[in-house]
Length: 395
Image (cartoon, rainbow, N blue to C red; front, side, top):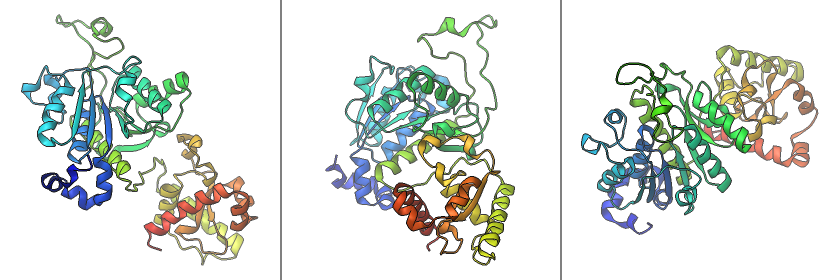
């Protein structure tokens, strides 16, 4: 893999990526091995962009075939491909786009019997693009157990608004029935409640599953027609653009992870402008009470929004651990306020932390040096977060 980057044709084909990532980071991408499971509207687009971005080895897994109705959302399939297994379809087209990539196609269903075969070989990333709950849960649990990095796609069907697509921990996903079911099953069956990044939409589904009707037009039981137990046979209405965007988002996330490019995804914080106005006003009142004036407050409402949403994800700095991640943390700002991290410095974007009311008095009674000595882990975490503000604002 490391040698074909020196090929003149390959280096020219990847020149824009090399210019973007830098040669060393692009080399990491080229030497990566990624497994994509589920090759429909989401998975085909994700795999396609990973290929076009120079990933050196791909394992493509799907038991299903290309259908005529799937052409509205598939990345490369044409009418001539209808009836061909999706994995083989992608392999055929991909070999024409980037023949240097080592592509393996498996016409398989992921389950306990195929887990070792599919997940062996120490893949650098696994993309879960499966739309069946049982299989999806089994794959995610297997990745967690094996310590493999995995990114999971949630429901892309029945949506229309691309601006509502997000990347966040599974526990933070909202308005998505598939996320809710997967969360419940992982917690109930495997004790997994967080730590899996997902791509999902904040948009509520626009339409429902279509009823299953027989040739006579009468509605029948879909389970009577299942080829594979547990897999849906009812139709989810899909506007093809949304699964495609899901796939592109997944590819972007994986590429930045593989290359080491730091990207901070937008937190899912359900606060509106009035909430940030309240937090700004509380900061002013606190500064007046503790320091006797507000002259050292160097942030406006827009910068408060940045500090609260981007730095502290809408929850107390004391609640930043992965175990505490969850929507309940930011349903309200009734018990949160901004205070200075270091009392000797002004209240600017790189010196503000978000705390609960009950945590403020204790914080004000101590010093940064004392925190550094007594709580080094907390001190290092806060310092790292505030350094990001310095970098973002070129301070």
